[in-house]
Length: 244
Image (cartoon, rainbow, N blue to C red; front, side, top):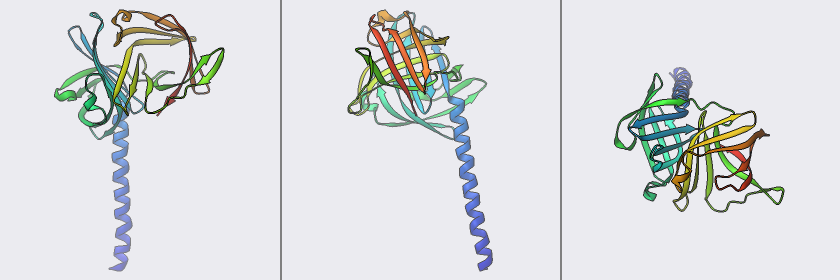
């Protein structure tokens, strides 16, 4: 009996390890299937979901009316068929910041079915999050007086820029104080060293919707160098680093 027990215990441990690996593999596969941009249209109103490198954003706006309704986002993970999100910002409700939200989902034939905000919906895939600039970026350096100097951000305030294969969104947030300072986004292209943004929503100034901004851009040692004129016409040279 002692010999059998010695044989059974390793077998049980191996089975548990195998099952855990299978569950992890399924979760990773489902997370990969989510990666990219998803769109839901309701008349002139659009909802955009972005999943990129364990970060997500959900934004509601109308390009034709140049109106911005809401955005929120944060880090997420996938457990089987459930999205587990930790909210870092919400333009409408500070109370949601810091909360954990769970949403059931399924992906089939480039359609994402979810129960976000307590209502079911089917989202069309826009892209799969594959591009040289795809990722979640945080500004690290800026040019001042002709020199590139590090940006020292104190506390929990941060400015993020999330890019998928075709879309971008930036957000200035402070998860620690639950403050939301602003966001903007739309479509982008990056070809032959030119990074071009087409703005579809801008929370602080609707007059900028429809604008097309062109910048010089390059990837160097894992950093994104971004230079040109801001939406206000100011010269900028910024360096961004990917975060995971």
